[in-house]
Length: 98
Picture 1 (cartoon, rainbow, N blue to C red):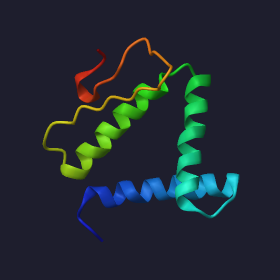
Picture 2: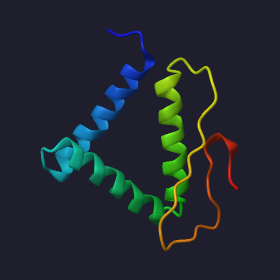
Picture 3: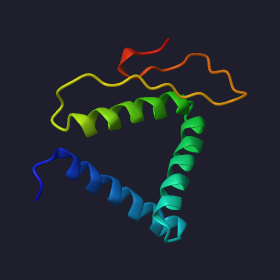
Picture 4: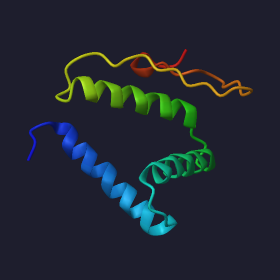
């Protein structure tokens, strides 16, 4: 087994995707991943979470973990915006809200 912590993270993602596939059906992994992310967005809205902020944070964490699997280094700045939608605040990775 790989000593890279990202292999365990990959397995967690694969487990979540299998559970989603079992419920939603389909076999194209890329489409399933997109649908899962979109459905999580709907859940976030229902729970009154800022989904764009969460996506920016998740991408920042993902990029950080790819470069520093053992957790040494700074997270990159990520900004997510939706055309025609003005969020109350933008998110810039680890730096926090603008």
